[in-house]
Length: 228
Image (cartoon, rainbow, N blue to C red; front, top):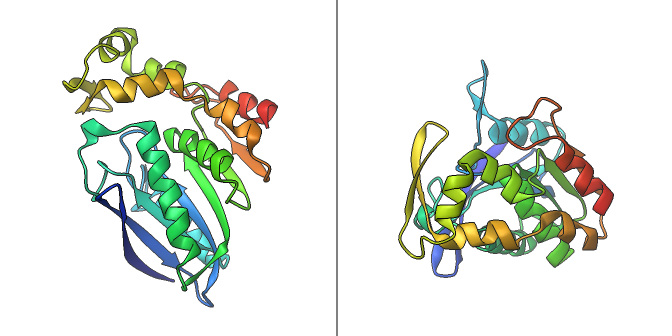
């Protein structure tokens, strides 16, 4: 297995990803999209020294699959300010990543799958439906209703304040850290409908969701499967 950094521009800002290549590359490739406030290595897996996505990339490489896990703009080491994060912006990042993979000689870009975790699942559902590019799409604990899931994490008062904050970033305490978001993010919570979008995706769909999940409730999986 070989890992290398991959950089590409989206709307004038640099997106950074980790390209993981198995022995025998070029190989089919999986694009991985992280969750809310996450990054390309995602949450730590207890006792392993790895993150969810870095571990998954290694395990996929053992099965002969390449992967690209990206930091969406404003997250990780990609350019941009997290306060400017929007769903549409992250969708644009993932769409651009698929295009980059289609021209990347070290992978089989025409055999690309898509994997999204939590909010990244929301992004993946929209990307799959709008592009029809992924040969298959996997949603892990994916957000089907952002008002319910992200709004539930942030709280009703924060959601109400966010919808009127304009270009002034709202300071929010979440996941034991303080983040800033502008109204454009909250507007997307109301307007983006990932479960409706996945109904237009014609490829295979895999949905996995923990029954004990209290952040994104398990019935989100039912909504995606029923729509598809």
